[in-house]
Length: 364
Ligand SMILES: [Zn+2]
Image 1 (cartoon, protein in one colour):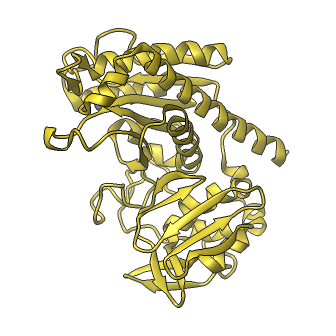
Image 2: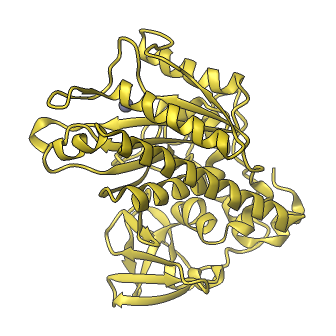
């Protein structure tokens, strides 16, 4: 339950606390998200569109200190902050761009009454925390010190592969994670690895992923990062390349690949306790990866991956590049590129930790 002081301070948080969640009952052992009723009317204009509550972006954004201006009237809207950041929405699109970084929402942007509208859950759970994190400072954790790094796959599970360059995902992920451990430790973090060699916890993939999360929880992880490389079917291999960053889909929202709600949509997993810091974490990581690697921006996405569901700390999963794309696999084969991946992740972690430390200092 939110402290009454916080509800008084911020109408946005009050409305977020009152936002309806789906009827799914969370597992008994998991603390449900706060559901205290709002103390006041929502401070923005709402409408019921496509069977969901939507918020008028042109009306709501000035209340977060961001100024709306049309790029293309009725179709493309930019919000700009006093600090020069920009967030661009486009009609019918499910992604938006924050300072050029592609970020996926749960629902498509709608048109209504000469404005663009965003689903209320997207606004409350994704956009408001990104645009004005200080409003949420009391709900955010301290900057992390213990970071568990998870090299995807291992042992009898090679993950994705590239035959031409004889690359296996399990080897590339371990190499990146070993480099990342060194970089993080040189910055004063304690980095713990789920695996240090070519092994896995279990030959059963479900058990293996659960054990990785269990390992992180037992190690006292304050941040969990799982590193992977992706692949698509051969028919799409030449066309698809780039970097994706995933965090656990916030409770009640659709994952990026979901078309409709399913049995998992409304469940509060242990990882959902960290929906708020995850929003910031994913953005900082993805911004550094895209900016530094110069790969194509496949998006900051959401998924209910098993490792993300069961870790009890903020967590992200990175698909650094596509091994199925020969041009990109050629880059991955070079140690310099893997070092770049590790450096970009380390810088993203630093940016996230600095933001949390800054917000913590401001709330004292
Ligand atoms: Zn993988």
